[in-house]
Image (cartoon, rainbow, N blue to C red; front, side):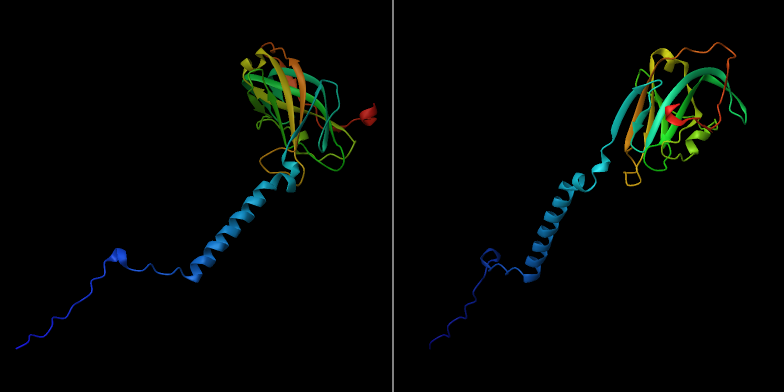
Length: 215
């Protein structure tokens, strides 16, 4: 008697299985990502072309010079120091030194104002205009070539007077980057003497310059 033949089952190993065909959707997504990468790369490469105003410019001068920096013109007329400040509102004392900078300022092409004013000492430290003093000239918009005089007061530690000081006036155009100034005026103030104890420094209120820049 003949026995029936045993049924055979083919065994397929995983490594021998045919690889699935890539889906068209996967290929399309890959193409889209590549296109986006190219577009973003091109945009980054052209940022400086699209927004050239992001690069600040610096103009330098000395006391008495009219320095034009972007939308503003600035001239420093005098620098005074004291241990007590009379700013027209209060009498303020300090553990350091009050440095009062008398200056004239106007716009150059259209109405403008000072964005930031600071003193840089010989060690490279920047000291901004005091928040305790009025500093009314900083909050004013000035017209083109119609200069106004006023006083900006900076409170500094006495060690800041150990070397030369530089006044830095930072301005911005309307389309400038918010975190970077469009133009900087740097005016060399030289060595400023420390005040004697009890010296009072007074603030000059904003006023028009008779005769303008030509006076």
